[in-house]
Each structure stands twice: as structure tokens, then as C-alpha cells.
Image 1 (cartoon, rainbow over the protein chains, first blue to last red):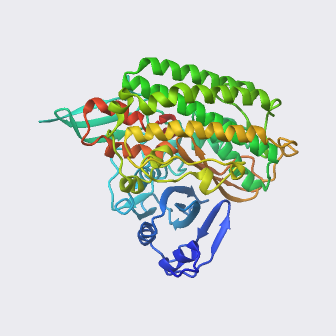
Image 2 (tube, rainbow over the protein chains, first blue to last red):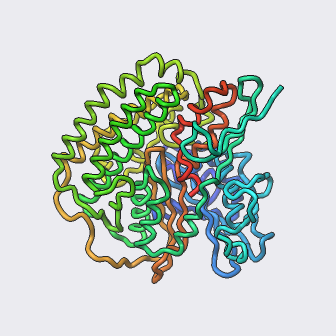
Image 3 (tube, rainbow over the protein chains, first blue to last red):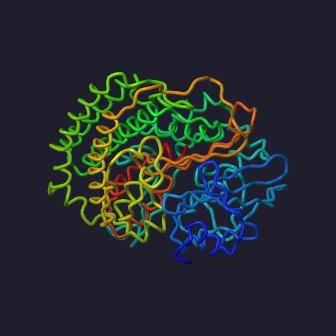
Length: 150
Length: 360
């Protein structure tokens, strides 16, 4: 990082990406491209950015899911959208960053329960919000029978 | 020999249901496991079935203490999707409501903390003071819990007589400075029950991603009002109290000092309240397709809303809420390890937890 770099440019350099930052809806977005979520988490740790949350979206049809990872860097909210295949319950998966970022524990567990997305490399039990209940019944349409129970 | 003591989900030390499984060796806590979900209502899912008016009323019910903050954050996000900018007077009224809510939340917490310390007289004093804050909130909004103040593009009710509110705030500030703050900061009871208890180190606070007064009591000077100002906070002068110790006493001091800062902000906002409209014209809103995010500093720390909309739809496609207690609560595990079992009720209360917010 050089003295004339903005914080966002410093992040791009650290992530070895030339993708442009897009400032919209109160967030500075960067498309992660080929970047792995674990590499992103390591870079955020090095920058001492504060993890805020992950927001999960179910995309129409069988397009899968979008997971938006948010970190705060000196009051600047950063967003990194990751797309996940999701044509079956088994295919929606992404690496967990729990071992790199302790703060993601509950939100990874919540998304796992609500959307049935698997965060590889971690354990979840017991369920966080609906102990003893079926996984994926909160927001995920594919488990229609479970959804009707709400 | 180690043994497990379950605290909750229904326990005299808990204001709302959650469960703390404490693994103890004698009187000392060796580890703890937290269980939430006893209040889970599926509000995020329910939000997708409500239109842009109904969803505000729904999200106001996420929390009974900081109900105004939830509608403020939601409305700010929805304003991002409609391109509407509230008039200056509305921004000031939003700031006033947010600070009054912080006052009543912090005084309520001070009362509960006093009760857990065995300081019953102070509990009654705090609740008497909180009633006065509630009176101000009622005078402005007509309500004591769900104020229904925020709407897309502004606020629903005006402050007709700022001077009357100012007098109430001054009386409150005087009472806080004369009774609550000195007792919490100087009394030997408060010191002996709180100093060096339930420490969350700065490093652990960073690692856990804690927010609000808990973060500031562990030496992290983070406050969304300062870092990313919203409403009229850019025009307010205030300090962000920070304490480095990370113990229960530091959390007590941070909130006590924040009470005084809130009074300072309230006096400025009421004195400078600009004239004009309190909301934009029209009742129908042209939502754009996309996602907007908004963050505010609630009494317990940063609240974040992500709202997603499809053009032409009356309902949001997705509303995601990240509440402060959801971020802070996992850190309780690290605060109680190595502490006496008898101190765990006060330690868990020191984060000012809101389980209703956490479960949504």
C-alpha cells in the first residue's frame, strides 16, 4: 500500500483484483470474481476490517443463491457478493470462514438453517434458532412442506 | 469435579428467554454454551408478505425497547430504493427520537444492572427516571413503546413545542448528573461488583466483532453516528465515550457517559430544529429494483438492514436484519470463563442483551 492509495484501492491491491468498486445502496461493492471467500476473509483480517454480516438471497428458479459478505472498514461498509449454485439442496455450499473470523459463527449457522446452504469445514449442531426443527424451513421455498408448518 | 448448571431459558436473572449452559469447576465457570431461538418469530420471512406500509409496522415490533431504531433503519434503506430524501426537519426529529430512545434504553439497563448488583433503591430511582423519558416520548409520539414516528421520506408527527421538550430534557439531565451517574461511577457497591469482572479484551472484542457500548468499553472507538453519520448527526457535536478496561464497570461507565452525551445531542437538536415539512409529498413510492443497506447506532450498537425490492412490487423481496445483540451475545462465553458463578447474571446483563431482537 502506498501513501496516496485510498482504502478501497488498498483492498483491491491486497486482493489482486482490477475489478471496479461500485458505490450503490449504501455499500461499496466489489465483485470477487475468481477470489475464494477464505482468501477474502484473510485479507479483511490483515486490514483489521470488522465483520458485519452475511445476507443470503434466494435467486429465482434454480439459479441458486447470492451470499453478500459485509465488512466495515473505518465506517465504510464493504460488500462482496458470492453466487452459489442451488439446483439441489446438496449443491448449495461455500467454504466456512469460521476458523478465520470468529464473528461469523451465528450468521453462518442461521443461514444454514434458513436456506439449507452448507458452509464446508465446520460443525453446526445444535441448530441455532429452531432447535429440533427441520433445516431450511424459514425462507427456502424448496422445502415447501416444511414452510407450511410456520 | 466439573458440573453443568443451566441458566434459563426462564431464570430470575434473565429479562427474556435464552439459555446459558455453564460448565463449572467448584464456583468457577470453565466454559459456557449459549442457546437462543426461544423467541424466534420468522419476522424476516413475514416481511416478504407485507407491503411497504405494513412492513414498517411489522419491523417496529422486532424490539420493544429500540422499536424506533428499527423503523428508522428500514425507512432509510427504503428511501435508498425510492430516491427520496427526507426534509431537514424530519432528519432532526429522527435524531431526537433516536437519542430519547437511547436514553430510556440506557436508564432501563442501569436499573436492571442495579437490581442484579443488589442495589434495589437505585433500581427504583432509574425506573422513576425512565418514566420521565417515556413521558417525553409519549408527548411527542402519543405512544410509549411503538412510536410509529418513521415513514418513507420523513416522519409522521411533528414536534410542535421544542421548548417544552427541552425543559423536560434539562430536568432529566440534572437528575442523571445528580443521582444516577455519581452513584454508578463512585459507589463502592458498584465498584466491588463490577471492577475486573467479565473482562472482554480489546483483541477478543475485535475477533468477536462486537458493537456498541460493549465494543467501546473494550477500547474500540466505533460508533456509526460518527463513522457514517445519518439523520442529522453530522451537525451534532458529541463525544464517543471509550473505556479500555473491558469489564462490567467499563460497560457501566460507557453507558453512563453516553446518557450525558445523548442529553447534549438532544439540547442541540431541539435548539436548532429547522422549520419546514416533516415528510415528502405523496403516499405511493416508486421502488427501484435493487438492494439498499442502512446502518444506525442503536442503544446496543450497530443495526443493519438490507432491503431488496423488485420494481412494480408492493412487497420487499427480502429484508435482512442484523441486530447488535446478535453480534455481541456470542462474546458472553469469553466474558464468563474464569469468573465466579454468582457473577454470571450481572456479566450477561452487562451487554444489555435483547433476545427479542436476536431471534427476530
